[in-house]
Image (cartoon, rainbow, N blue to C red; front, side, top):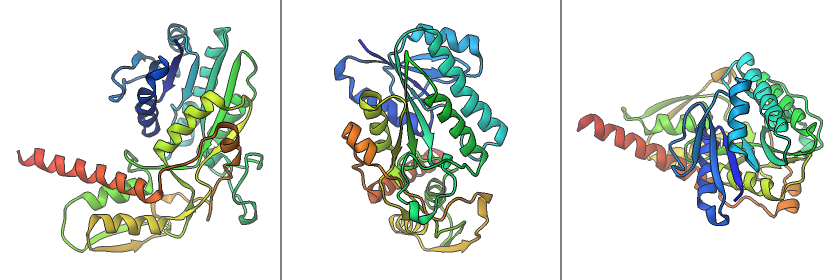
Length: 315
């Protein structure tokens, strides 16, 4: 019976990976999650409590899990500072790989990377391929790139594949991300017209549904080629402002938008989109959920949670 281990199961992406694995139990796989807190989803998964930054504790847990496949999602994302990103993303990945290597057995490892590793990409290089030279422009991007390099340097018996994920959206998106914040604020009550302060709405990103990302990680675990990076996106970019307009339509609210380009203090490329031919050719995976459906599901979840909170407050 194959054992699949997931780190970071309580995160945005981890929740959906565990759900996808749970639905695909037909092959008899056993699912194990590893981290400080047990995830609420996928109740049938075994949980091993461990601090990923403690080598002794981590090595004991990895030995107990005896995983055949590891999907590594644990780490830190903005707005975490540089030190937290380095410890959580770079050192955390190095510790995991060292612990798995010490087992002396074949393990397939899928590392979740980030488009932030790439840094600036000129328009003529879009959609960007996996062999584009990385020049990360943020501490987060640098910490993820170093983790990717560590994975690509791994040798047998480890088989490491890197999934460089672009901009996941969909249900559960945290408020630290633009659409997550927009949906949360629009779901709140208040007088009309509602006033919303936003940052750069002209930026374009390759937004991909988080459930498609989960499916891509599973496909790479089964059919990806060790030692390679795979871009996970849609191959198209969408304007942030168009996504906000769609959420406003879904909310039915009257909204006055105040644009402050430096809002939240984070800036990235003007445009970003992935060349996804490699993952499609090697695994047969392709994105299936539309951008509109991702935003609709994000809105439905957020609006439902707000309605439940209001009901509980009044009960």
